Image 1 (cartoon, rainbow, N blue to C red):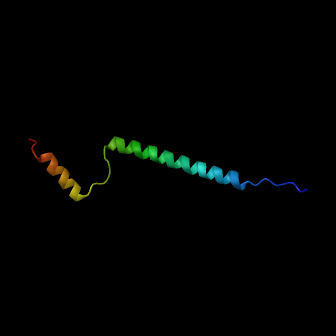
Image 2: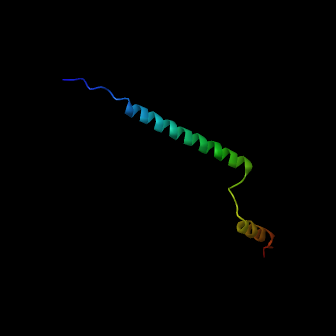
Length: 61
């Protein structure tokens, strides 16, 4: 019987997937840290800005 040659394809694909997931996690942690420091939730459009301004300026009963 001929010996089965061990393929390097599966370990290489697994390493690439693991490295990609690790990079994604690192980017997410970094983005969360920057967002927490800047205290900005995300981009706010003009309509939302007006609504927030109106809610803040309206006196409460």
